[in-house]
Image 1: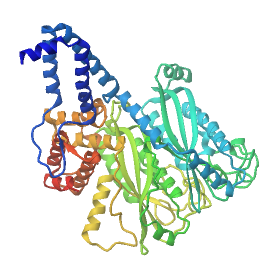
Image 2: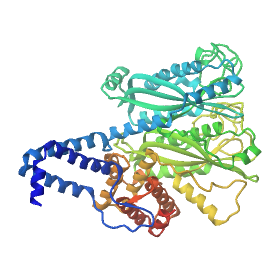
Image 3: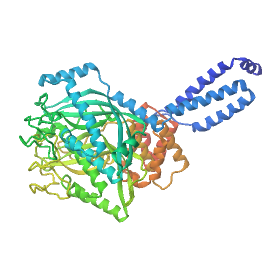
Image 4: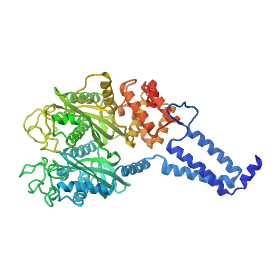
Length: 637
């Protein structure tokens, strides 16, 4: 043995370095990929432990080796340091690394072939011979800087004619949320790097054109009373960040390209008369609603590239619903749902539930009012910052011939939210991804008003724009709104797990379903936002008893590392306390707890196996939720 060791010592130092480097590479892969012994379904687990102890032991042995054999040990120490730096710089999930990974995922999700683009263009040309790719992209290049300037100046009037009602509501509420917190957004060095068609869907009611936007800018927050010059100066000190978005434009199939005669040229897209703009978006000559999508492309949705899904979602009950309302289409329905979401956010941020009185049932307005009153009595309020919608997807349509039809629309969004003192304007809150289902109701037999197109924020009786005055009646014709008699109104808002638990209960109860019942199963979402959402909820569950012990914190940290989520965000979420997770916390042993645990298991099994540490994390969470007996069956699915 000693002679073998002497032979090894005679080897050139570079060969030792190469050997240790080969050994260290798997260690880096272990740290980033969740390696080690893997638990597979149906296999007993044993052994294991935290990687940190082994690495510390290795480091001490390496230092001792360097003292005894400096010619070999010192290069090894240098190499180990470089390997650790490489891991921290490129593989460890810091905020910048996570953003880089998200940008890469966004690019992959939005890649399409040139052949597909040509097929989409030809499909449009068959109905609109004047359509040209460069023509529609020129409109995008015109709108992009115009929209950024309107956002920076906090004045949306110049872009109002180009946006659907829900998209306008989104930007308007976001500006108001920032103002309520005493900040404004400062941006500069805005560059549109690329605009490219990546999708087309056609129906009887709308052509939907998806365009990928790749851009970069400097972006930061400044006090709300900062001047434009001060805001620009602050933005110039911010890092340059790139991003990918998908802009969806919609237009009625019968509309055609009218070169030089559209709202981008300052003309009514219907009659060609000069159009001066205005809050009503109505041409004073022909009364056309210019942002309806009936005459030209209207921006109806902005989706983050990382949330983009090329696969068409199958909506259960759509065929039955269209039998009762042939004009029913997902474009208008989802625009309406998005509009209601932003009004819901606005009402909570302002603490004024009556702002929803024209678009929501009396029950949900009353429920929201009770929640806000409870906070006021405690001297607190809800704080919502940096709210953004990732996707709006119709999940299910229920037909009830003797009552109200129901539409279940999933909204994936994120925000820095929590509860703060009533007089407190700013607080460090963690960004929390959210997944909710909004249920809209409408009296069976009511038909979709296709004449208004994407102008969904209007009185269904007189067609006047709705207001947020707090009155439940139309300010122009006096028609009572906030009921399902004439249009879709908001009935319930539920965290996704709660909605799915109710869905499963109704299915298992054997109750007679209407023409369409809730879906048998939902799709499994495994992207970065869903991983982050589940981890935050795990943190909330761990903190539910008031303390998070060292072992729980250790498991959360392991999970954050393996799911590429910055640990400082999880720490911020833990420090924010219970108010951050209001209504998201599944009750112990509840149906929602089972649904959440099932989603967590699906996430852990995304690579087909569960290792020892992941299993410990699952066991710990299942014990907190009171669903430990169900865990094994979930792992064997």
